[in-house]
Image (cartoon, rainbow, N blue to C red):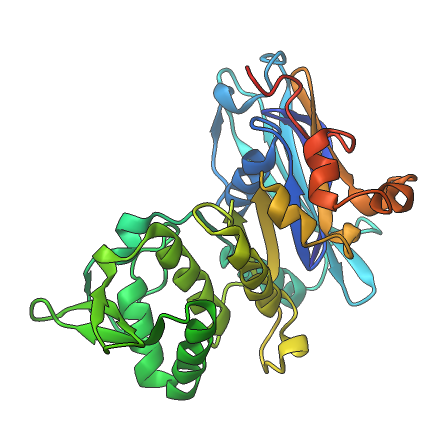
Length: 339
């Protein structure tokens, strides 16, 4: 997995290191670098020349922008260094893998890490795209906004019917009013989905379902797909979700990150999530090593793993973790929440 990401002169990340685990929840105010860190991963995955607008605020004449991905691999560390050096108003890039010794890792290691990084996806769900009718394609993937869900579910039913049945069973636990996912064909070559009510067996079309229900179903689908990208990021997975369902959302992300704990026979996914929700934060009280606080000081940002605070045990004895974070005691909140 990626152990950490080091940033230099990239937007608000002037000199910052983001520590990561197999699952990481990043909390902090708006503009504190949460989305910027995910954008950086996208740019490292598919690097190209940058424009001056990517340079850290207040450092428009910075000579370079640098992002280092530190991978943990078989008791060793491999660094992927991506650097953009200023040339006029643009920043051409150079990228290389290296071991701690400074040598280049074996070709098969480079190929494996490149493949993992290439699969990286960021999800920020949109109910309109989730509910949309989809043209059937044999290998459609879930879009970053949740698009293509109907055909992804349809393919899961056809190719992995036992997993589709497990998904239906879990759906009924999350939403007791529904008992099954159904499909319809609005036009030739198209597919849409419905949820069937437990009482009365009525099909409710996707466009008539609430945003929260659609978001939760999309999370649930990802958790039950037989394979997923090696690295996934969820932007505000709590958005539109009732607080009572947040534990299920957490468990869905855990199912991706820790498949062995759910008796899943597949590779683990490194999951990164961002949130502003004290309710979601509170669910990680027993796992402070999975929470990273994003602190904003003027135009700069720094990251801090909650478990590395010297006062963490004392703080966790006094109140729910979400309440402690919301109060500002831990930091990682707006300096003026009304502005």
